[in-house]
Every structure is written in structure tokens, then in C-alpha cells.
Image (cartoon, rainbow, N blue to C red; front, top):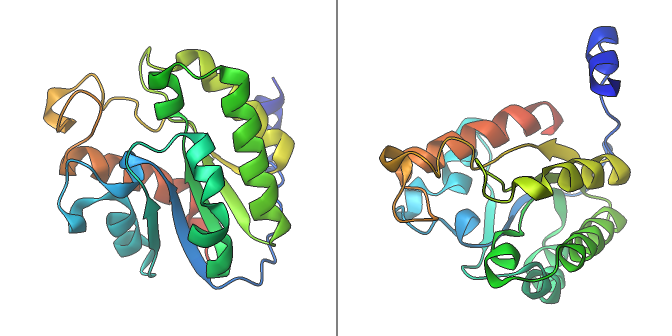
Amino acid sequence: MCLAALLACGCEAKVRNLNSPGGTIVCFGDSITYGTGADRSGDYPSLLSDLLRRDLINAGVPGDTTRDALARLDSDVLELDPYLVIVELGGNDFLEGLPKQETLANLREIISRIQGSGAIVALCDVSGGVIMSGYRKDYRRLARETASIFIPRLMEGILVNPAFKYDEIHPNSKGYKIIAEKVYRAVRKYVK
């Protein structure tokens, strides 16, 4: 209902740090950000860079949980003078059976620290199909509560289609192209 009201009046959800003084765009995540299953020019940050016509930093580390990502946040993100940080995390937490509340608390801390540096945050809901469907509302709520850009269902249509998959959980170049286009549509109006 709230979303329908926002769309009807032409209003948008508030995004924190629109006047960010930072200079870089950082894609911060796990193997999906890193690009496992694609060559280096076929990962989603490289494809997104082409769409935005801007250089991006790929700070994806395969296997990272939100706990791992929190430990490297300073060196891999905050020290890079970020303007915008696209956060794609949580899939490995799910696969490793970490409690959902820990995942959400870690994501909240990551977002808080990034925003505290003055940067805009875009939060990716890493669900697709039934995979992590129980997290969707939580990711949406977290984005709303933190005034972050929200990118819903990042893996939707990829995990169930062999034409877009490298293996059981990673996209191929075609799948990463879909991800890059989803992220582009969400962030393009915020990129200076």
C-alpha cells in the first residue's frame, strides 16, 4: 500500500547521502560480485561500468559471508573514498546456515558504517525464486529503514534457468548481464 501510494504521487523513497563527497563506486560482495563463472570482462561490475560509463571497483570475494565482509569493510571499501557502494551479500550466510538475524545485523552494521563515511548505499536482495525468499521482506525493510537504494530479487530468473547459469549457484556471462542491468536501472539516477 505504501509503495502504491509513493508510485501514485510520483514520490520516491528517501536515499541517504545524495550529496556524497566521495569519488568512487564500489561493488562490495561475494562470488556473485567477484564474477565466478564469467571471464573478468563478463562479471556484473565490469558490465555495470560499461552501462554507467564510469570506472567501478570490484570488491567481491568468493565465499564471503556478511561476517567476513564486515571484517574487510575498512580496507576494501571505506579507504577507497566511496561515493556509492553496491552491497551484494547474504547468500553464503544462507548456504552456511548462519542465523538470519546475524546476517541482517551484519548488513545493518555494514550499511551504517558506509553511510557514516558519507556514501550512498544500494542494497541487493540476493534472493531468486524460492532461494532465500524468506529474506525478501527483511532486505526491503532494511533498505527502507536505512534509506538505502533497494535492488530486489537480484537472482530472479537466473537460478532456475540453465541458459543463465555457470553452475548451481553462479551465473554465466548472460546471467551477469541480467544482474548488471537490474543494478543499472536502480542506481543510474544516483550516479553523478
